[in-house]
Length: 451
Ligand SMILES: [Zn+2]
Ligand SMILES: [Zn+2]
Image (cartoon, rainbow, N blue to C red; front, side):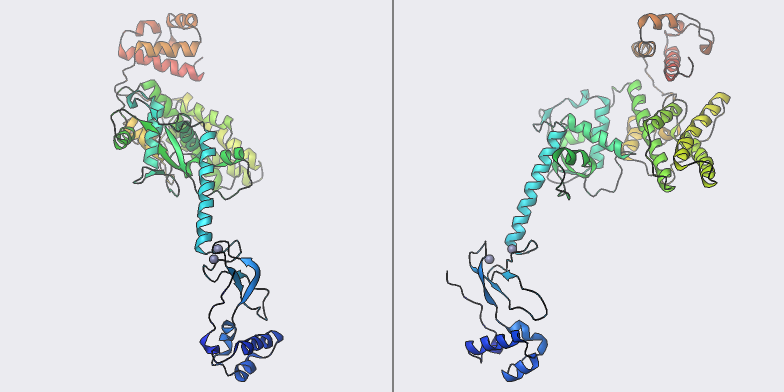
């Protein structure tokens, strides 16, 4: 096709095309620029000379967008070959071209990658992207808590997207708990993933990609519908859950779960501060759970703080290794708790200090339990709720769980119990106070402390 070169600079207008060719040739051959400017009578400073030289047509290269032959600046003496470019749209054949067509192409590519990534992730968590119909009031307590916490964590925009990218707040005390909360909502298809920042690494396979993607950094949409309710009404119901039928047993169970994570966070925080590069093990978590049977999170902080201080001193004088230091600090907390428990002393809890409270912790202590800071300062296992409303049914369920069979449980009920003041537990089951006493006894038996 016919290709027009761009117009010649007016500073070269007094020269014929042959003279311009000659000028370019002399420049290429290494003639001094000052001499060329003088000989050809060009009104330009030496530094601007090169830019006056007209480009040449690039052989065999067509702009893929405009279908015209591309141009190439003349070779500079000082640098290597120049890239060819399109005189119409400015496109050049490099990966970094920023012409509008290439930008658009890149955006399309990214959109495809994002759509594919979102699909892989939703499939990985078995999300049914059809909206689920639920009765909010009948949702399990766990789901109510997780949904409300998640909505409080994410930023909702006008298009109802729940954006969790670039958030500077904590959904829960630990990353693994964050993952558990969000993945459980995904697996129930209450939410679905709708957006992700373009993944950096393309080398992973789908499974690796899904496993390594942090769920608390994605965009989501609520995937629920309720007859006769708008999206805003659904959002509101989930944000402010109705807790009128919450059972104490369930509340306690959730409290323990959150309390354990708060302790784990404190342990990790201290290890990190001391550059003890080691992750907390399941056995450590079990030790923490055991301490929480009789103590609050704040009291655990105190036990662990003192125990770690001792372990670090031993580490510093070379008596123990770094790994031992980690084990000793947690075991030391267990021993302190056992000593305090046996001596029936009361100890003052620590405060949160520099560890900011997470969203789920605030929500649970303030809204679900309605005890705010006490959630941190009271023991999740033994705290007595004002209106326990504990029923015979709940006590019996717990009893069966603890003893494993009706026979064993009934036998225990009919034996005098020293810790209940030599009274048979069965004699206490006819009033709320008695029911509570038996229930707490069962909780303690469950820990293995009073066997
Ligand atoms: Zn072009
Ligand atoms: Zn381009």
